Image (cartoon, rainbow, N blue to C red; front, side):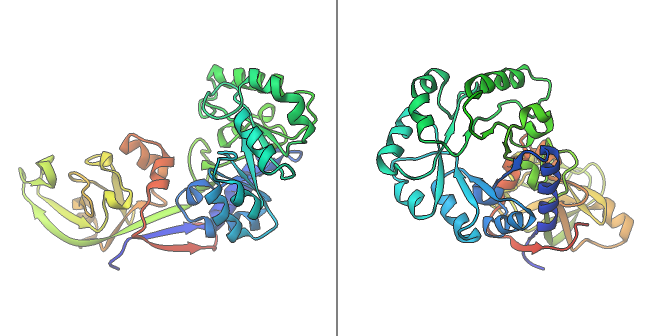
Length: 354
């Protein structure tokens, strides 16, 4: 094996969606967020697997992502576009039956002028101050927008991964006040909001990171596994340094494995000297800086346990999920997943997760 192997367990993905669907409740529709190429795992495979699991509505970030998803799903499912109706999107929205989530009075005007008979949703700013129509603007637009019967009215929580954060309740109150009495479907929650409880669910939830094995969905099955082959091994005596900047120095007689992956493959440099890989359950720490195409790993404990060098080490898998690796790099699981590079041999498995 000369190429790192990224295994995507589609059955684990499906089971995560089904678990979040149950958490959302019988009266609430559970959509699926597949932006950023299915969180880096391949929307052409992820989308159909989620549709097979039961998802009927999907969300992407931009219209171009919606085109790729429509190709993968066919004509049935609904596809919402979070960025709304941008100036260059009209043809894509029309030709691929995409539903823009309109974010501003300007987008509302554009959509009504360009695609007056096409469906649309409304995204409201309930306090995150990122995307969405502000309360004052919505009050001015409310009657004309409602007359066109939006497909969905949604907002997004800023602090849902912190259950005790007061902004969650504040945004819930604002969203409820803005939307009560509209007679329209409403959606406020992604993964974290689902876990906050039924008050946050409304008519549709939109899980994203939890589908792919990430926090705050602590019981999620791991979807991504990444195994990296060993190119060579060498000995390091006490006092010997390894890698750029000589930032790691052996404190004992050590066995160092050089692996075929680096920051060009999405294993970001910030995990240098902190991340841990595994071989047959034995933890093996990174020894030195992550470089563009290579990692150096201290496999001394593995050699002592098994009497031979490992052929490969796992940086994602049963012993370590995306959030553990993210913590080592001082980031979040989203960045780990969406940074995974194009040089991996990708394998999609539909068997039961290990």
